[in-house]
Amino acid sequence: MNDRLTVYSPYEKIYDFFGQSGLDIVPQKLRDYLLVMPSKECPNPILTNENPRVRFVKYLYYDEANPLNLPMPTVEQRKAIVFDPYKPDQPTDKRYRMFTQMAVNQAEIEGSTICRIVMGKTIPYTPFSATIGVEFVLLSNYAHDSNTRTTALSRTYSMELCLLEALNGVNIDGVGAFMFSRGVHPDCGSQMIYDEKMNVGRAVRMAFEAKGGSPNGTSENF
Image 1 (cartoon, rainbow, N blue to C red):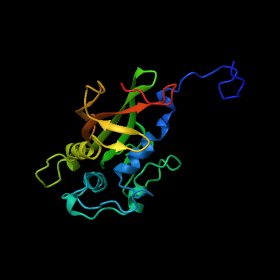
Image 2 (image 1 turned 30 degrees about the vertical axis):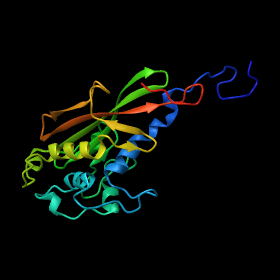
Image 3 (image 1 turned 90 degrees about the horizontal axis):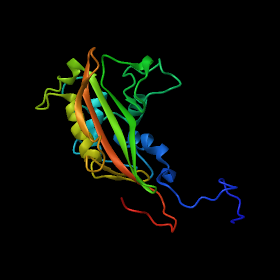
Image 4 (image 1 turned 135 degrees about the vertical axis):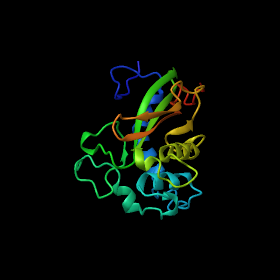
């Protein structure tokens, strides 16, 4: 019997499962990545339209036509559109537009574009690995959705394509590699949605793989 005191004492943990990899950080990582927030690892990200995340932010932030021709919002402007749970009814003039939960009644908006990042279904394949679904809900006022004044006639569909370009095949440190394939997760895909009021949009479901350590300290493949 192992006499070493652990958090599992008096029992012994015989292997590490995938859930020990810090999955709680995923919504924050995705939020900051999609908003092109500077980080210690990348203090000066590319802020031109060649970056799909820049295009995503402009579609999200601006309600006007030709959003891609407008300047990239500043870091402070980008921070201001992230939902503040301590001030749910006190958004800035741009209102809250980025959420990491499905619904916030005080911030339901019929006049602007929003993005919700919601953790989806977890499918464990072994004790050591699983794929985690992530759903991106993109909604925009029906008039704003079609006022882009470019060849892209739908703002939210353009945002979906930006999401796929920014995430599909990208390995996010501390999270995993994002994939858009039903061979990886059965929920992957996208579809048209609307709220039966004034908002139309897209629901985009992607997935990433999460792995834990096996008893000998290595990772096990699916």
